[in-house]
Amino acid sequence: MVTEHVAAQVTKAMGLASVQLLNRSAGFFQLGMDSLTSVTLQRSLSESLGESLPSSVIFDYPTVTKLADYVCTCCPRWTRLPSTTTTPTQISPKTNC
Image (cartoon, rainbow, N blue to C red; front, side, top):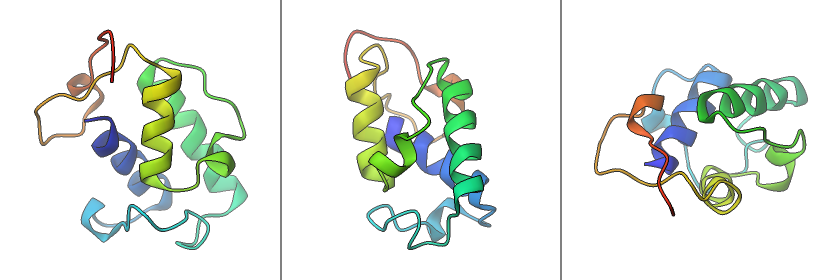
């Protein structure tokens, strides 16, 4: 799922011990993200998806849910797969999200 992948990338960028510790509806900056971490997240997400995301994407879509929705909107070739893993190989290009 795109949401799971985004959550995993946020968890990694913020150095959290587990994705379960991440409140998906809380703002990234409320959770302690700073501007350097936002750049790290934007770059790692762009790289993992193989899509160029704007540098302001983390500020424009500041929660896991909003960011995942944006990825589905701006990158319509990505779809949610019936998998519980969050590695980039579980996200495949398809026609819609």
